[in-house]
Amino acid sequence: MERVYLDWNATTPPLPEVLDAVHLAAAEHWANPASVHRPGQRARAELDRARAAIAALVGGHPRDVVLTSGGTEANNLALRSARGAVVLSRLEHPSVVRVAEAIERGGGVVGWVEPEADGCVTADAVGACIASLGSVALVSLQAVNHETGVIQPLEAVARVARAAGARVHCDAVQAVGRLSREHWAAADFVSVAAHKLRGPKGIGALVVKPGCELVPVLRGGDQERGLRPGTQDASLAAGFRVAAERAIDGPSRYERLAVLRDRAEQALVLVGARHGVTVERNGIARRAPHVSNMSWGPWRGPELCAALDLEGVAVSSGSACSAGTAEPSSVIRAMLGSARAQSAVRISLGEETTWAELERAVAAFDAVLNAWRASNPLQPSIP
Picture 1 (cartoon, one colour):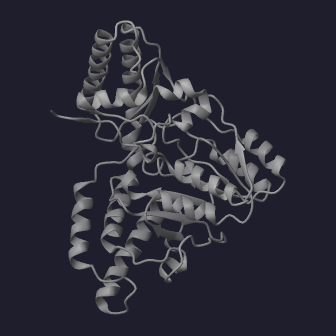
Picture 2 (cartoon, helix red, strand yellow):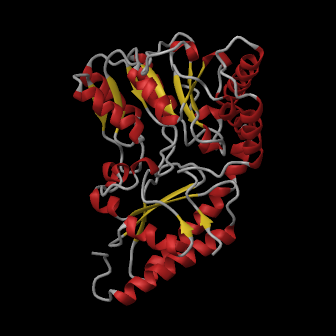
Picture 3 (cartoon, helix red, strand yellow):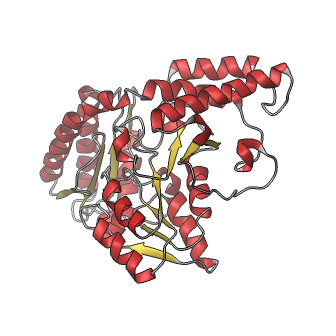
């Protein structure tokens, strides 16, 4: 069975040239980058080239790039560095929300902003939260929501935060390489992950504006200026470099996907109607061009995703970092309540997605709903 992959927000297929770069560096630049001898210097040069490519993509100077194990560690590093109250919403990625919850359990102050039903966190709501706390050190707001694709008003929120003397962290993992730099330019700390850019897993970065202090999460050596101790992997850095260089013109490749996504959504609404199901879109604010999140009435999202997988179509029912849990999407629940969250399914397109693939996905939804109705004529919900 030829599969249709529509889960690009979870991870992207690595580019052939990325794999080539990783393999070459692993064979030739395997020395410890901290060593002063020539092999070590060659490995360190790979790190420097990666830093330069990431800085060119995200914005900033190569010295502002702290290499991490991925977006999760970058988010942890940013939030754990806050010296005071933190403000965010339940729409953030688990690697942000759960750190904030841990800060709260440890006696720290966290302000939780209520999101709008359209999927946005407004500057007015952030301002009200800051005012209720009095003093805030950090506001964290993603550039693009990982489940709905909604583009957050980071620039407006940053103005409110800075007026209160707070720094701004932006989880830009789902935006870098897909949207233009303006969507995270206002942030002081920007998180990025290579595997969302068709690079390798296991490496990411936190890009930090000059003058912003970081506090290490880990303790050990002096790698990454002591901010992220541990021996760096030159081969992963080489792959990240290639992916970052190519991702500079990624927004132009992703722009065309909005038309395909919208056509697919219209077709899926019609599929639902044929089977007596009202299909509702989650996140009606301005979105990135490649993401669709829809709730399927009485059908449960995880079971629908599993059934579609048997039909050769890969989609998801929430964040990949929350997969395997019985809980519905915390993002959709925060926006629209538990019922909508229970039946939510995310489709995320990539630069190689074609309309033919989306047609096959629509047909798979139709086949699954038809089979379920035939086997459960009186009760469409899976027990």
